[in-house]
Length: 393
Image (cartoon, rainbow, N blue to C red; front, side, top):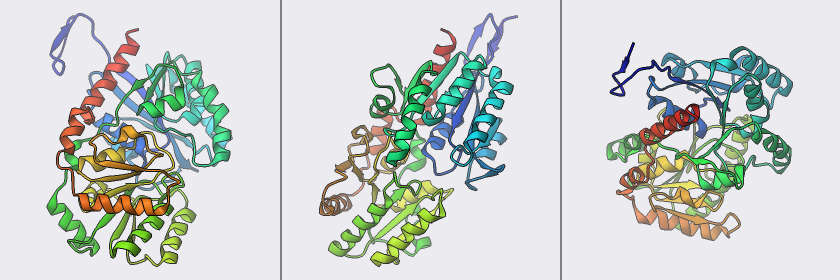
């Protein structure tokens, strides 16, 4: 019998099932860039064409490591979310549980999309052994770790893991060249709901009132997990020098750490420099998008990145952005950013912050993002077309 798909508006002589995709991700934590990406793709999917499930290792002894996560949101909207033990806590358990998962469920999927290059050696291998024909490896960063010893450890795992991938995707040219070298890969943009992050003066006023920040007080904002990679300790030092040179301002950091020690060390640094009344560590926020309207400048002195979604969100709000050269140049989509070398004198960073704070918002930035293809809708469509191309091979 012919079938009619009302969503796609065409007749077909053969009834087609949606493509079943398993996304292998580190977590579904609210402060993870990979989570933002897969969540945007999930909310803009066409269920007649693709079905998404998720496997992550953000649990220890059956308990989530990050209390603010989207596991239940995905489940409530029809996805299956599976978990295995955190690899860094108990590697043998991670390997055993991952193998058992693919033995039981691997044959259910047309595509396994791995967003964890460090674990591809196991996840894509077990997917292959389960008969999954299409195994995608996705590069979200231009380095494997912020620690040298971990990069040395990860190098052979990544090298072997790449061999189990049939197809390759990256969030930027820089991230793709890092992981795949000269091999072909699809560059899939980290698309966002651009309108959701648009500057709103009423939200700005409300956020400032909530936090006790004056309407004209300069606010520098950082968004991301508190980790060595994000380099927030340097952000605090550079901000301290800015305050010393230019007077009162606020630094607001949205994000949390995997380790209580890392957060404590950052707070200790704030206190040591005497910035306890100027720096605000707000932790994870379910309403993080509101704070882009609060900020006057977005500050990202990261040691390395792929193409950070938070930077795209900041540009959607029209924020001037101050980046390190550890952030790929292609991140500056709207032309609202400046780049300073990680080894530059701190005075150069102070100057960059000062210039950004005096420049105002880039009100044309959202249109530039849209024109450059950074909407979630456009990239969700491109990803579905990519999967369809794989399955039709």
